[in-house]
Image (cartoon, rainbow, N blue to C red; front, side, top):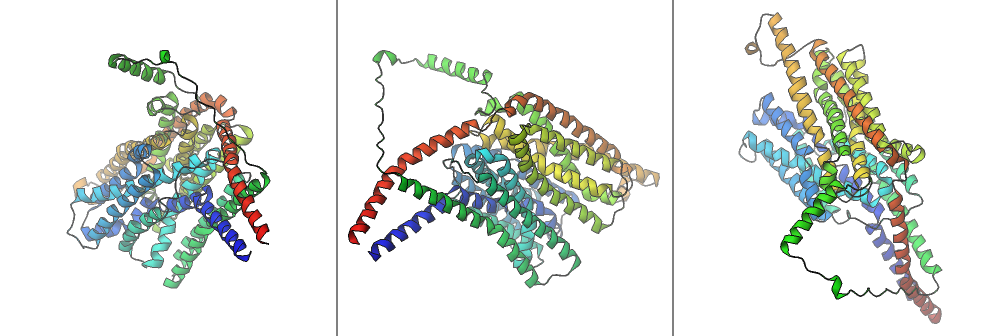
Length: 597
């Protein structure tokens, strides 16, 4: 009898552990860790000086390397296409290999363990390494949205928030492991994100969606954990500037960061335990075995079977393609890739993203020179960067959670949140164009929050309007507006206007461009015209986004998650059918225990 009980309890434990590791909540925990290592392109400024000094680059060459990094980080179409045809584990594996290969070769070059690469080779290496984060994003982010479709706003806000914190998280790790050695930071970026993805490569997969009565509460618990992590990192950042940390202190701070990173695992185990208990109760509540009979297939008459000639088949395919293109599905249903990309809704979304993310990226890339032109000290300029980074995180988190609350409670269209943040970005641009004491502090806060919010809202809106079938390709295509906008507004507009003003100041001093190495502009005029234009661009983006609001307001007034609720019910019915044989088996085991007793 004792052996029977121990065998039964061990089987129950094994059943529970299997459910934990195969469950949605453990998959979400694994995705959090992957996302916490998927935003390391933000650390380029930390190790770029090592690349510049050891390889003998000038500033223009380093800027070219930075552009290659941004190009790789924002072109995610390849990962989206791979996700269409390959399993999720393949997407994550390819990303891991690319991440390790790209950054490891850069580390070899910087430590002079290989001959000095040419500039174009270094550009290729960093482009490959940066592009790997799109594979991590696509593999884990898209899968999470598909597994939690009715909480996609909260999910995307949470996941993109961890991406925003990844740079600060890895800064603590590299200080604890390697000390203040920027070259070793490149090595850490090479191996640790790749290792995390490989460890959880089979945990990230599409699953049957199911109803969870506490789902909203669990997401808010995850939110509070991420907020605690953000405030801890902010406090560590401030403390490290005020006090000189020992190596033991860095180890302790990294341990605290790890505790908050792994705390979601406890929540995942708890939720899976509750689900497992519920499943056991359902098994015990079934007295008999439900016999499920399948209806025989309907007979097909021979007259219904016709064969078409190749010419007729080709013509039918043409007609079918044209019909599907002209007769688009309703909003919220699954669009084909061509239907979505050429729809007016996507064009409006692309234009708004071009204006919003393009101008915000331009501001963040120039925040250091903006502070320099207004004669702020260097430590104050670093504060601008920190403020923008922290509020980038808050924008990502709250745009997901707050917009979800506004949608579910008051049916406020999600694109209206994008309109709001475009207006916020325009106000921030005006504060830089017409500066006053402390204006750049507020502007960096506003634009950092607007940038994070717009990026998250873009991913959510695409999933809601065009369905989840081709989501991996569509959201990667949508975010292409960001680097295009950054190139047009940063390189072609702001950079040229800055250089023109700097050359004009040189001319007033009786100097020419060839007389100076660094072209530096000082004064309010350096960015006045360019940021007035950026404010107008953001305002135009807000108008474009508001047009999308008016077009989609009837869609958002409906129950956009209705079809997922029907899928929940269908999955629950199929689950009950599967549970019946398990109930019979458990009843048999209980009978054997009674007999032995």
